[in-house]
Length: 152
Image (cartoon, rainbow, N blue to C red):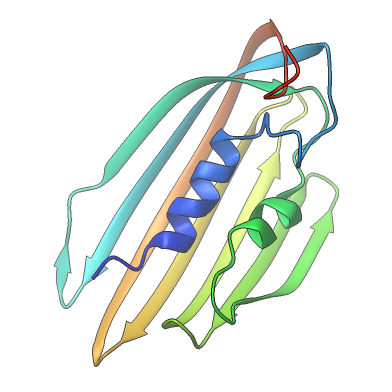
């Protein structure tokens, strides 16, 4: 079963923060080392964790997790209990189609412009169940010339 699309989509969205649809154009950005690790548990089996690390140039403004999550919802998935308090954002996602999915997430921004986050999704489909756990870290280390796609 390949139903970790929501977790993967969120990770891809975080990697694509330079998208002009999500962020306004900026001239100076922050260089971030972005790491995403996903572990899948299914039918009593834990698959090896997959880790991706990339250098990204992000716009200098804050990440808006709500836009990133909503851009990756499929089927009848709904974003619930979205709360942003200070530097911490939490949310829940519920779906019944294309699969039954219940998920939670948390993203914590740091004063230095970085972030950490986690997501947990439980998926049930065709009598099978699977859960995914994804962790994110973004470590800033300098500035970069930020150009949204199509703008330079």
